[in-house]
Amino acid sequence: MPTPTLAVVNCSQLVTLAGARRPRCGAELRELAIIEDGAMLLSGDTIERVGTRAEIESMVGGGCEVVDAGGRVCLPGFVDAHTHPVFAGTRADEFERRAAGATYQEIAAAGGGIRATVRRTREATEDELVVASRRFREWFLRGGTTTVEAKSGYGLSVDDELKMLRAIGRLNDEGALRYVPTFLGAHDFPEEYRARREEYVALVVEEMLPRVVGEGLAEFCDVFCEARVFTVEESRRILAAARSRGLGLRVHADQLSLSGGALLAAELKTSTADHLEHTDAAGVAALKAADVQPVLLPGSVYALGSSRYPAAREMIGAGLAVVLATDFNPGSSPTPSMTMVLSLASTQMKMTPAEAITAATVNAAYSLGRGRELGSLEATKRADFVIHDCADYRDLAYFFGVEHALETYVGGRLAFSRRGATKTQHGV
Image (tube, rainbow, N blue to C red):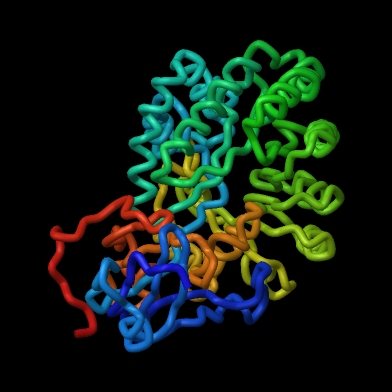
């Protein structure tokens, strides 16, 4: 065994999520593989061993740093599998208008929504986008998130989409938070192409995709498949072109209506189908048959003032490997808080706290092709973990609106800490 460099001891619950090397479904979603009075041994950026405190402490030698969790919960870092973390400006004005009764669709039809952020993002330089996004990066880390899937989609021109993806690449290179880049040039039709839909689809397929792939700027391609945005036929063309160039596929599906997005995701066997607020039983069955992971985004339902949440219990009952994510963005879900999403999953979609944690960690990691290195605390995996200031994992969803993370580690290195701001000792 390599020389240990860090030991984490005195965890009330070491929530390992150890298990089958695949996404979890059905009853497996509730199996967290918790080690009571647990501990963990690291070597560099890798987990060497997990076990009881007595087992791990017996292996600690000179030169190994020891972190005392103080009787707190230790979890894998959250893997947020659907975010839009690079943009300029905010849409607080639209938030106020929705509070006064305007709908998301009405605001978008009047030139707001995605297109409002597009205008501001186009005006920003790449450097300005990086600087603005570092603020959001801090928000993710202080909430216990260590990996985010990061979409473009606020450029909607060749140069501006590339600018966004390059900014995501620079943020990833800085190392504090892991970013998995997704090209979302088909997020909406920009103002200059509103009456030229076919030309914009051709621009995405024939100019944007070759540049994105040629520069190695993305791992996935996503499309907002919706009757008023990209139709099933337009979405199929874009996704097929992306697959032919080697990109993985994700789909914004059935968010605002039963648009056929889930059925398209099943047809193309995409990695994920995201949102799914309006997906029916046929769509759920098709996703199961095609082994597509649903990514559920209750934060966007909440923020838009809707009450139509995805049918999580039906999806779990059908055997789907459900994922939870924030949908962090400036319009419909301006939250980076995975713990808030855990709470919404339990209160609004009736997922148990254990199911929600699995969906936000190991299942999310598999949806991004990272399941063999992230999402659980097991030997050989990356040492991305969080010490939360509570003694029971259920507190993360139970005490909502609280930033529970005491310390966040990415690759075995401390990326965020509020130790010193609290002296609470749990379970001792």
